[in-house]
Amino acid sequence: MLEIKQFEQIQPHYNTMRDALGATHRPIVFSICEWGVQDPARWPASAVGNSNDIGPPASWDNLFRIINQLVPITQFAGPGAWNDLDMLEVGNSGLTTTEQQTHFAFWAAAKSPLLISTDLTNPTTATLNILKNTRIIALNQDSLGKSVSFKRRYTNDHDVWAGPLADGSTVVVLINWQASSRSLAFSLADVGVASANAVDLITGSSLGKLTTTYTSTVAAHGCVVLKLSGATALAAPTFTFYNAAATTNTLAGGAATRVVSSSVTVVGFVGNGGTLTINNVDGGTLGGTKTLSLDYINGDFTMTNTACSNCRNAFISINGGTAVQVQMPISAQSWDIVLSGYLVSLSGFKAGKTNTIQISNPSAYTPDFSRVGVSI
Image (cartoon, rainbow, N blue to C red; front, side):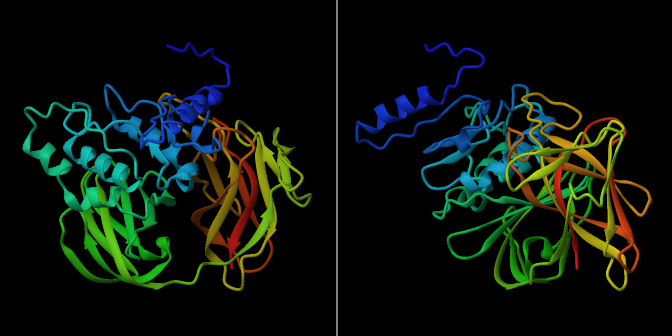
């Protein structure tokens, strides 16, 4: 057994094993287990990226942490290289039946290996109903091999993830973050679609043609999994961008610029008294509600559960109004990679170019901000 020292670069050891397996000229699946500590999804010629343990015991907090960790690496998944989100906990203790359904559906859509860990000599009917859903399994085995990717987070409400399938259709996964059953409205615009024919992949029900929005009742921590086909594309929104480090902005309370590269400078130490205020923002001719597109760096990676596991919170205020919490997943497991296009809609804009956007957090640090876009 190879002993790995705490700060040793372990990629070369896995490369040696990869090359040895390749030299056999046999089809072999090489599963890398290093808990995602050194961001294996970004290793050249990597076969897999992985997360820290989902359990035992499994918990909803563990799922939240793993899902946040996946946000910046979905693009690396494809035939021959899969992000391993850890084994399935369907049928085990720790998760409700609904949470197990969400867990299984998300793992499948992310193209994670589906490794059953429960005792199959005496499974419950509920366990078998989840594990034997051929429509969800088909997502995992789709020949295109593309993972769903993060589209939008409505903080403390729901996530929207989507990805392409081999037949030209799109799979959409909605995750209900609320711990209660509720009505959840899905905006098709969040996946760039105006209308589409839809099938509920959990029940198999045809939903007909959806236009603009689709509303359904979702159980506590439940999910909605839709297959969209025959879609009418929606024009992507356009933005006016404001660099966070621009001299026209106001940095206060310890907030400071940081040069990341020749092309990227960010504002960090926002929060815990530090604030970033973007001045002279154009609210257009009408003002009102605008969609913001946030480019940021958040390398606050953790293997354990915290108040915001693998994410940071920013509180954003428009023109001095009530600050709105915005929960932002990691952009990488380091502080030099920008995540672009995190969307949030905020009200309170005025017509004209005298608006302000202030970013803060009263009790913790926010991500470091590169730029903020405001919809035109």
